[in-house]
Length: 130
Image (cartoon, rainbow, N blue to C red):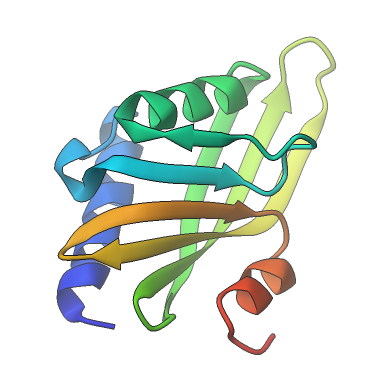
């Protein structure tokens, strides 16, 4: 993994934590987001797709926090292992989950983002052993 790719993803997480927004220059215009948690596994395409994905997810929660635990080299991708906590709007359900976000990179831009529930699923998807 190039240090450049690592820095791009790290900067994106830091900016999101500080502002709740994305560093849009980090993403290709036709980036594809696949949420493997979603029962219908919809694809979200482009910057508007990222916005919709985040809105779909965050609309269920009163509080939501994501913290990067580790970043791993996955060839042409960066695997961010994350810890998410949240509390449901109506249900009050508490979420405490260790998940993975696989950022596929090309020419210094994210071209695909795959979200996996569970550390083991994310490692397997990235071709890394658990």
